[in-house]
Length: 138
Image (cartoon, rainbow, N blue to C red):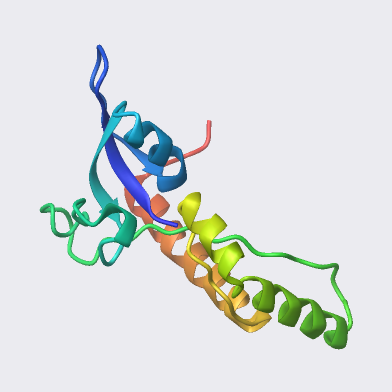
């Protein structure tokens, strides 16, 4: 799933960060214009939309989200492995891939260790951004 910068084509203009799945129908209805995708490469569905880097933004800029299924602490490894295998198989089915693409999602199949690694990397990355920006909770 990629994020996209957008500008409304209505009375007022704005710049913001949106997920493709939110922009897709609005884009088709010409209510928004995608300025750039926060992805490492252009997406097939939006081949005419540049990446943030191509549009003059930071080099290698990427903002992605992911969705995972979590079980209770102490769940037996055999159960985790069985559920993970079934999910990975389903995420490889052509009809599932097509439906996901319709909503702007790209399938990411992996292991529980991959999820743990992604969560840790995101936590480190966003903690640095929050720290450098001085963002605080009120």
